[in-house]
Length: 117
Image 1 (cartoon, helix red, strand yellow):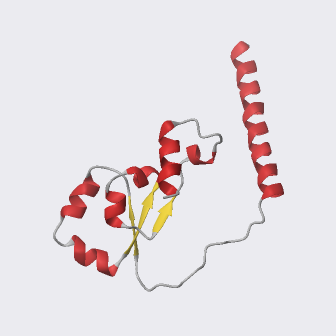
Image 2: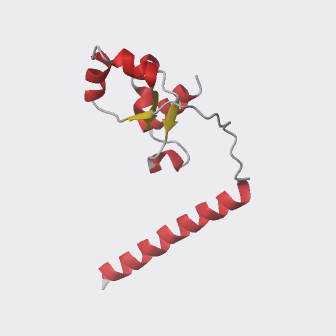
């Protein structure tokens, strides 16, 4: 019985947080796209985080790939030293940690500092 009550309370908490977030978004966002759109005829390569990324950059064919494609990196890759070397055109943020405030996580604080440089 206690388990069921805990699950019900958890459900209502999550629902409350979701509704609070949604209401905040509706009231405080104007839903405009402030990013200018420029059509490019280059393919976009999405690069994930991980040690294989270093191997990719050290590959001799990579410079040719770099010239013909745009790059998109994800989440905390901005904290990697390779971020400045790659100079990606796009950064995708998909981790739910990014949408929680305040940023109590040290990694998030570093991310926000790096993003504003």
